[in-house]
Image (cartoon, rainbow over all chains, first blue to last red; front, top):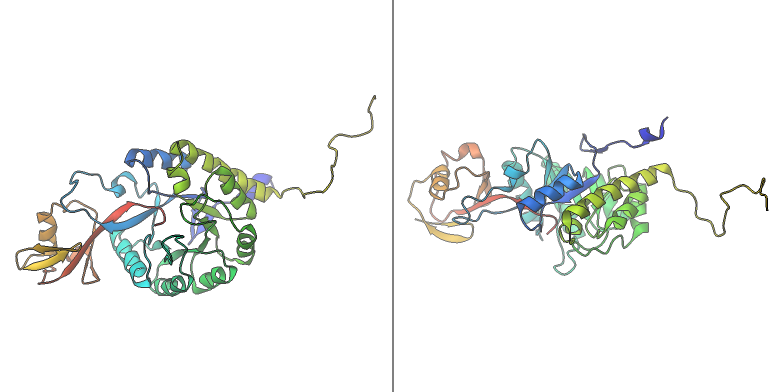
Length: 264
Length: 68
């Protein structure tokens, strides 16, 4: 089998995606920058939030959905800012209505304003309700392997452990937990939150992650469009390195050139 | 009569449908979802769903967002 056949598409809820980089659409300077960064990232799945319409303000302002064509992107509504099961479930139902029955959602139920860590207990409750209501749930969680497995058992289509707090850019804080989650999983595991730069993304992919969701890492870079491009490459590189099976680490040197034939 | 729209008191005529309200608010052309008293009203019902006194109306749309 050729080496290149090892690199298969990402499959979530029965749909295939070539890009393993998922991108949020928040925090950009304006719609133009959002579009350019998404383009450069190569992302196919992008997250959107559901919020009250500003009535009477900016009547001519283009709706986000107008500049993000549904035939080009898979929209992933999230429950950003929800601290309760009720709010998260309401948000998902509104998103489904807004997007004409679209059932793929990203669930997050936050527990703490400073760290934005997920409330694991409420997340489990919300996941059960949403899965029972027919949603395909991709779920943001902490890096506890037991919670991750339980979310999979509930029926979530993908589990998304954080690398570090949302918007912190700290990179993978707990690689061995992420590794354990990946090893135990029968659904895609995507790192969500905390990635800061390209090497963080590559490290996540080298652990065996199926994909990465990021927003701040790109939007808050000095040059977001360039960072989007960097992330695209880092994720491709990290994935290939993982599939290639890295060499073992050794304590001592191992020469690369033969001894025979030396003329000195 | 008074209703609540996105958290604010508003005075509107009795007997208004959601469709008519959205027209009045200049929101007819927008991709929106509407919830009344925490129940979603499908778009197909906008012309026939008549608003009542003290209805709590939420009008929402998609915006850019990552997590939080």
